[in-house]
Image (cartoon, rainbow, N blue to C red; front, side, top):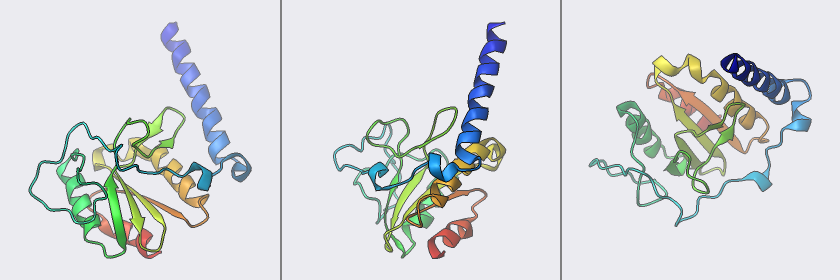
Length: 174
């Protein structure tokens, strides 16, 4: 009985959150503005594990780089690092209060893999998702797209799978 009540409670929260975030009039209920901007502080970046490979990243904002969860995520970072439109980028940390960028969902926080400052002033957020987890990440994609939509052109979001770097290019080149 407890399990069923917990399941129904979770479903009710998800339904209410979906209506709040994606329903008619969302622009009056959801706000993306400068007062909500995240700032990466120079002394706050402390990954649990550092990247220990021999690739020399040129545009990572911090001298330390948080380790990557997969080879594909590492390749995504390499691709981002080579883009002339990227001023700098950060391997975003997960669950590090004050040192990680997140988007709120009905069930918790979504911590995208990379946060990039583009030379035109926009912020580009990139999440690399393995194809096996693509379907389960639908809510994260929707919240990221909503964040982009309501940013007034100041932010871009993309979730990438299967090394589809052109999806990132499309956001950079808009």
